[in-house]
Length: 468
Image 1: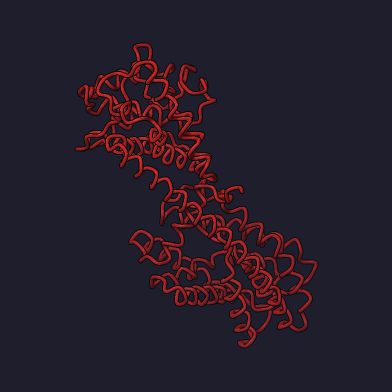
Image 2: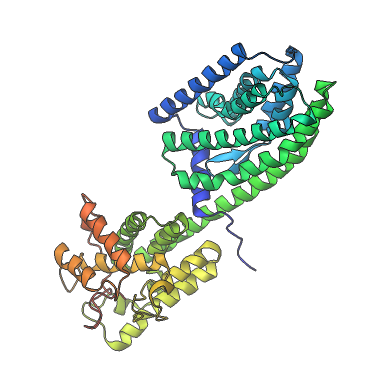
């Protein structure tokens, strides 16, 4: 039976979990300030539009209330997309824009989104204050209203189609800008990562806008008829539940894989305390180096979990070899070198995400010049995560005490890294590792931990910093 599929990439998984956690957490000062600026900016623009622009039709309070309620319901149908979500609000927003006084619509949209957020907050018992984010969420409605008013296209008609297209383009541009600016300024999420998440949201808007336009034009004589679009909500809710269920299963699976990795690490530490502590240090250093190299988040996750499990195969190595106080003979080295293959085999049995980590574990003792083991991979053929782990593993081993020798000085260890850059280690990894060592105020490998794998002895003279 095959292992369940882990559907989410590391970046999306992390941001979805952070977004869900943030909903229950009180807003930080920076986030509050950014949201206040966006809220005030929107309200200033929407109020100015409502007071200055001349509406093309009168306001029916009952109809406006019906549209606000329908939009609030639509906003609760959320398809998670990383740090944000895609919502089918276009089905209601487009008819609102053309069947209500266009100059009032942005304020009505803000009211609907605040109601929707407040409802979600009460239902989920979320942190207070987040419902007001609905005001800033309404920014997308301001530019389309301005375009339609400026081109005198407030009443639904096919001849205004070019104006509607321009209004939609303005909506997409402003919505993308506001989404990126808010999350980047308030939470520090990198712009390039946010850009990759906009695709689904904009596709949903693009597909639903024509339906909203058709409803508005068809209901010109009877505006309330446009509200028949709510008949699509049960279908969309079904799609939402199916998608969110898949996402939740994927998140749970990711947590299960990580839990399994930690259990395996604990098992390794129980078998050999030195190796366990050494692993902790290698994980911390490897993550720092990976972040310094600005690797993508899938590679960062593979680096972290690969470092966590890079020695897991040593469970199968006899204790007399693991704990030997002196250098290993050739027969013992042969057994020791097999630990990467054994580690991959163990992780392949778990399957899923850990099976892909097994590839990194297998390659964690390959050399840049092809002289490593078990497969003799060369250069770029070695996974990036494995290149990072290899250098960090060796550096940690050199700078920690062993039962048969004292730790090298930092200067000598760095000199060894430079000496073997381009042969044993990837040059880019050595550069990043040296930079991390130089910038760290209290490097993890200098903590008060008697951390080292006693079997991670310096290999025969041809490979002075090779790790078993």
